[in-house]
Length: 167
Image (cartoon, rainbow, N blue to C red):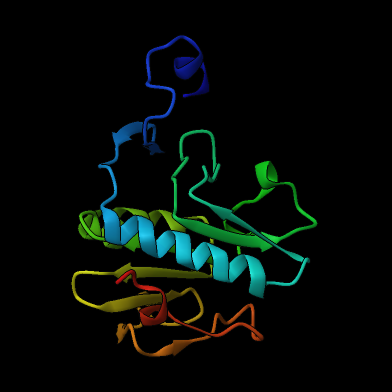
């Protein structure tokens, strides 16, 4: 994919994912999606200790043929972002408005395959969060956006997604 970008075959600032070797053109995000990501990013950057790195809207290189672009992934800061793999991740978050089926099926299966231990899909249309934990039911079921959530691998962090929705 990097060679295709360098050769000008893919738009430089386009939104693409590589899943199982297939290049997937992702739709542009709407105002709610972007506003939620901005507010969550600000909160997480302030709330997380220096030992935890956050990558908002960045490529996650799980393997040569699997490069999804989650909205957030958190991992130990002692690891270089290019070395972060599924089992290193402390939390992975997708904000879903128009891509719910893709996020809940194909991407959930991909993340589980690579050992992602906790994956949240924020379903802005249904006003809930689908919490996936590798050590439990995948997914454990939707919880309302008004529920305080604590990632299992970041016990000092608690957030209520409804507090970050744009007006």
